[in-house]
Length: 265
Image (cartoon, rainbow, N blue to C red; front, side, top):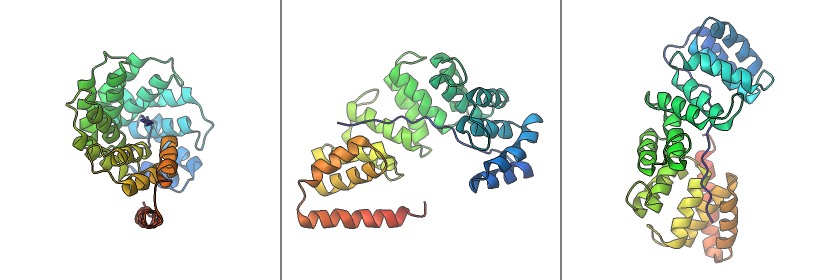
């Protein structure tokens, strides 16, 4: 069993020349001092700075430095989005899709995702692709979904890489191509995307598009499980029972090398 995770996350983002207050706020946020970040960004946001408005929206959405308030988040995102800030447009779309702070509306979500996607915002490109794949707020169109996923994947968006891999594996919106599915799963898996790690493990375990390899399968399942993927945990345990001692040692070594390589990321 495989679970495809379509995470829709907001992020603090700066674009263009950052002013001192924006930089100081970002430095504070990076060290976990969100109250200071809020104080730095609030005056700029009130003056109409779109980046500061977006960043305040993120703080309100996450409840960092302020009490969580989706309505406030939506208001700040909208102020920035109406100025053309693509991160805010995507973030506002997320709230409309979830119905947090605003009445749920897939059509509104699609509108804001499209505005951001047309400006090259990778998260929005992926999110718009999800709506096309599901037929939410737009007419279901797997080919359109694949097109938007491809745009986001070209920018290294791990969620889009995994989603594109799913379409290639299924032959939905693109010709079925297990080699391409494996390539996109691997691209996402290498970035730590847990669902893609599980999906790549499945291909290795079944010998679909890749040579059957129980060691590789168990390795990727183990990483997926560490990332919180429930299917990865089940698949890790199922394949572990089929490993011999030498194979278990090999997987353990691969996991140790992975953790050492990615520890600083």
